Length: 132
Image 1 (cartoon, rainbow, N blue to C red):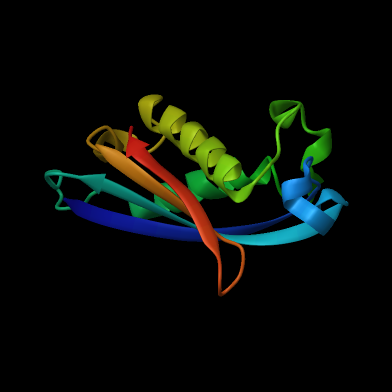
Image 2: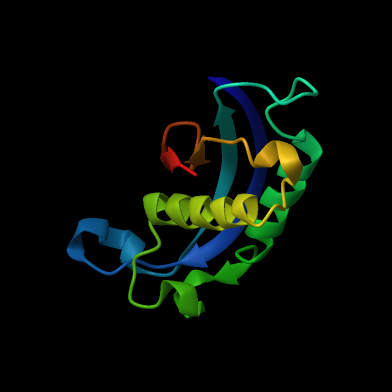
């Protein structure tokens, strides 16, 4: 598989429900570094996986919906803990929808799978990957 990755970041506030989360049950902030890797078995006619500029722009657009927001107040997350894994899946789903809608151009239509990784710190990360 060939791959291309893009990176961005976003800052949010949120809290968790459940004893598992200890002090994180209180409202707190988080800054995530987001890496998205697009994969396809063959390159397009121009020799690329996807237009890297379009991919970066689309990631930025998806993250704009979360930036500087308290995710506890966002309807998309009602009744859910916005763990790193949950956020990675939401970003994956929104990018997959953009791919299917042609927002990553013709080359984007050849993307077979994608990996979204959210880095919480230099020590911890979570993610989601799957077919597009």
